Length: 632
Image 1 (cartoon, rainbow, N blue to C red):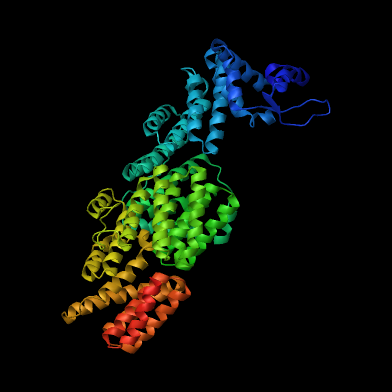
Image 2: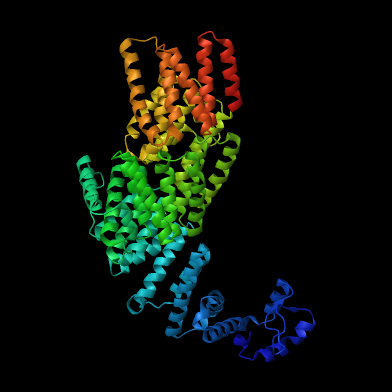
């Protein structure tokens, strides 16, 4: 108040004395050495409102402007950031009285700073208001006279508009930037906002189209539908660059300084999820290009995610799980070194979803996905927050979380995903939730994904139409599981056959072990009253699945060895090798129990019980079925 009123603290104390004695104002601090109280508060908000109402309406703008000017003048540069909102809020209420353009420009600059501060605190509506107020203060020639300020206000306003879901306003602001910005680098933030806007709305095709357009301006011409030869060439290029370095040394690369490569990495990074979902071959090129840029020019906030993605390429394409996992560890170490939540969110999400299940217990990924979700929301990375919300429910399901509890978790995260406006993970979660409802006997036909939250007759055609590979993979996976568990083995096998074309991509590695598991179990439960050639074909499919499962079990026995044993048990049963079958059932039960896969322990008990019943060993069958019931 001393600054605002341009009086000494002693004079202010005398002015307030009557209000203090009347109890309208209360001291907050003790008397200082001059016997003065330095801090006060109103008795109640209504007292403050009543005092404000006493100011004549015609004078309020003048008062606010004067307060803002005094605070700005008397506040030291060191204290200005802390008082920024107070200063700007007063100035903004008096801008109609400011006619000199230099002062209007200065207030616009303060609004830019206030908007950036609000955005970093995830107050996106307030940030948008500050940015647009700043724009209103500029004159018609500002693109010529105040280029940097004008560019920053338009670019920041576009991003804030996207972050609060105002896509029409975002598009208008982006159009201005793309028309007036001098260089490609200056257009990058606007392109990023447009890409994120399309991602929010689930428009993955336009996401990639926009990204490819921006990359061309930066001199990077990616092939939208690369051939195997194109992919192999890019993989060899990246491998050649990496051959010159130890993996551990990549963490010590300098931070990138060149603006063009930094802009390219930013665009590539914002495209990566859309490519992963719809065009996996393009995704591999994007991953390699990002890694190449980091090696050649230095690390960035995006580099941890780049290395995590490359880890998946190594696991899924090159078939080198150990090396892929090392790149995953590099990603986490670099994110910690860079001390950036945004980089950490992306690395955590990707590793927890696609790589870690090949080396550590699936349950260990769940707290990491919770962390990724929380940090994504905190930093405004709603795209990856949405993915993390879905995958922590997905991983919880396959780790054996109790279904009633998990169904409630999916409800909570469905609401959260809808609040941050993420179309793709929202649709994935409805498929998972309907699967859970079916297993809880809350649908008319438990083997069909039709019920309260999902209709397979609409969901699958839509996913295919928009090329949402993740939705398609998840739909078929859950469908195979439901058909198998509810005894529709032929339908389970037919569903697995339909899914095959969508499981050949590197992006399917997160679901492929589960597909192989349930596909094999379904095949082994078909009627074998068929021709020898057909029986041989089915067994060959099982053996092919088991070869893959054995490799995964070598690297992550806690997740996959008991699955391998259970399929071996069923295969031995079908082949009449009953003693071997019983040995494998016991190994499957023990492995599932030791690793706390209670739902798969239950399944192993159930299948063993059916085996004993078929052999006329009713007491064994009864005992094992009771154990299965207990686990379920």
